[in-house]
Image (cartoon, rainbow, N blue to C red; front, side, top):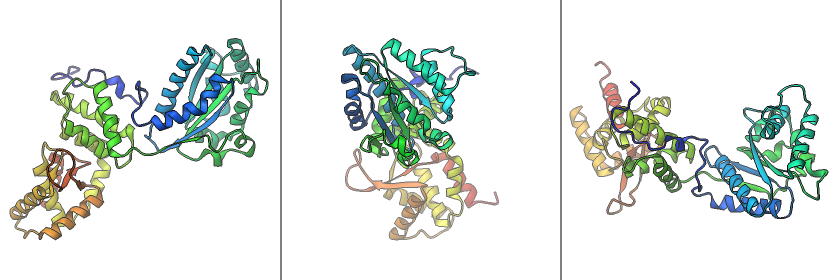
Length: 389
């Protein structure tokens, strides 16, 4: 039961965990450079710095923060400066006391979780930092959850932590990570400690950047030749709706697990489609409800023609549609009307129609399935076209 039927595609599945931070982050050089510029005075001039990271889910905010903090500690060691960091997930810890307790636990793991006020815990933290002659970078991930529940008083206390300086050194810097604009959630006193220019923005990843991210994780996580190049392209394509690297990595891992379950020894485009279908099966079902007859016939033809392939041309899709029409005794629509069907299905998010790229000669439009494996789609279309059977 526990054994993989064939050879596993994985060589190190841990690198597909959301907590894993690769040695180099793909397509986040701009954000890393800005963080270096902002926090360099912390190491070189004993100053504190407060910065906000903002962007949608899966845009690399937390991974970039972790990678930066690791690199910053290494840079400080070379400069013979003592710098450390601690990350607090404010979705899990959304009260002042629980946030401060986790920071104190970073230096005193057995510190009791009851019996001390916030003021007392901050005093203990100060003693720890002064004793170690250490500057601490506190990263508050999903900071909006803390601000929403507890307000910004703890932010103010941490930003003012260095008012009583030791040897002219600041003791604490802050980094707030949020999907929302946290400036609007801070009170005036806290806002005054953050410079409006100290914001690092993270945009959604376009398909070509998602492909590079998937390719990097593939190299780290999978054995050689354990995935088709078309499958990497398709993972990027199906994730690009959200620009979400986490979703892309999740699909890669799930596709690998499905390949192992079958004993396939290699991830194919069908495993990718199945992985996304599993994640978004209810979304897929809702997209298929209410399709008109010729949309169903077009999808039936596409599902048959695309089995085992990442893409087919519109010419191939139209030919398969005509065969499906003949099978069900329907007169196929003309070329222009068929193209209208494709545009409608593309807008519904069932298929993706886009201009061809590398690997296909000439300028043409190619069709791919995003949410559902070809075999599953074929079965569903047959059921919808033959409701009585």
